Length: 177
Image (tube, rainbow, N blue to C red):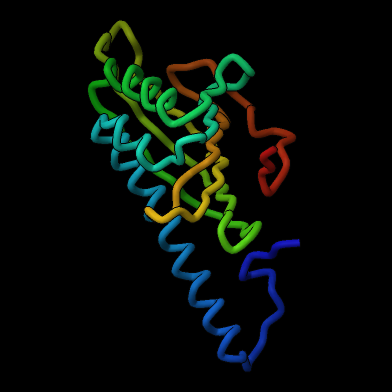
């Protein structure tokens, strides 16, 4: 069973190999979060292609609940993001409270809260969307660095949209098939 650093027993003396493992895990945590920050920055820059580049080729993504909304592969994701951002004028995306669970040294689940605001080309007829929710992501180590192979957006609620309460009853940490 994997544990977060906060859940591990405290030790005042570590062997050199343990210290190296802790340093590597801390660096991995920073690298994973910086990848997620880049994802948000690219979303704010309305750059769906750069967002998609942060995923592996055979990734699985789901931004809307339901089997009809599962995107298989990076290129399907790229098309979805570019189409969605084509009708977006501006946006602001934020993540908070990241919790990382190392399934293996090379596969990590990230659960974090998110807030996003988007203004659309149809404003004011098309209302702005403010969304609060959670990302459930899995990252894998690749030669290019940490990349997402799974992403789910779970909406707790929206202003300017109808999604609500999707986080209720979900497992923690997130599980992926």
